[in-house]
View 1 (cartoon, helix red, strand yellow):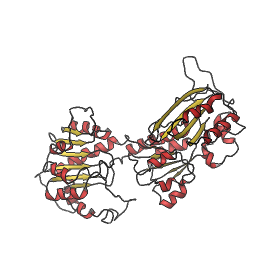
View 2: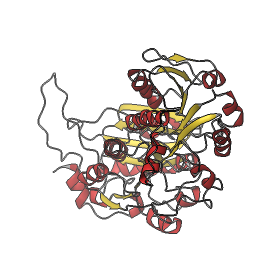
View 3: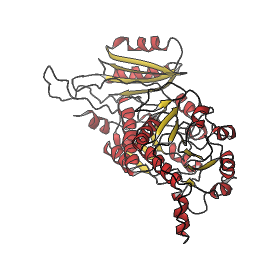
View 4: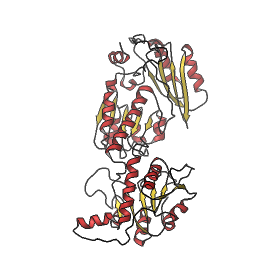
Length: 466
């Protein structure tokens, strides 16, 4: 009888222990049937699900892509889906009993919210950013957080290329004029982009992909990053931000939100830019000092720009959402000529959202089913090769604990009656995470094992996968 079926028919456990408790006394690790593989072939991986999958509850918010919904439901989990974010009080009530939650950028998982997450073991951010989650507190609770840092890189890079061309040709203004019935065929201050210089701030996955596309369009590429990065194509890294600003016709930002990047483009930086140049920000809303941008545009220092992200953004679509009560300078910004404003759509393509849905949902599944934390943004990254059908009486122990001396010695003392097939531990700041596959396990020994691990003074979370 497969392990999943046995778990599904085991006596109901306390809901808080669904993903953590050892098996009931009726569980037999010997009830595994498998076909012996040839000596040169590794046996198939064994499903590790210490629960009835239909009892695992997952909450998906903000219209997460259907690809994620399909992946998670295929596992047999209970998945509750909402197209929008939830008010804080409703979110607190919903999060009390779920084991995983998937969000995008509008849902705020603060300490106040996470304090009520009794069963939560993992968070999926179906986007690049994770600043909407209290990462430190989540780690303290043994909750891993995953995101998708690369899946929408191409979508963002393509939009930057489109905006460079539209800005150089003033096509956005001409389009709005024609929508109003005004025919204004002009060529004054309209340019080809071939032979011009693009300065990229932040040469990560998006910046480097933009670099390749830009060179294919005939642009010369310069870039600035805080660490040395090998260029792609003929791009050249400069040693200072000021040098890049002074030598670029177009400047595109691709940096994370952090104290170091807050208002990194302000009055002094606009003063360093070429007169008649353009600024594009599809990174984070805190990176550009918007009043300084407005002043530089009105003075003619810059010829225009494109902004996709803002310090404060509406929580939902609709009319009269982007107004002065949200950001005091909104009316001034929307009145500027040759400025393209978009509602945080840099990564909003069907392809990007599909890929993000697949990537993050697979991270959630691996963490729930295998304890694999590779790619976690707030948690030690640990993984072990899958157990196989040949590994009878083996159990995977997942043990998150405070990173203090002596814990591993105490854990291995608890393991003394078991053979350790594999063991790996890593730490990140004050949190450590141990994954161990041990053999010679019986239902009674697992109960003792779980009880002793839970009793350790520096324990954060214990899970057993069998």
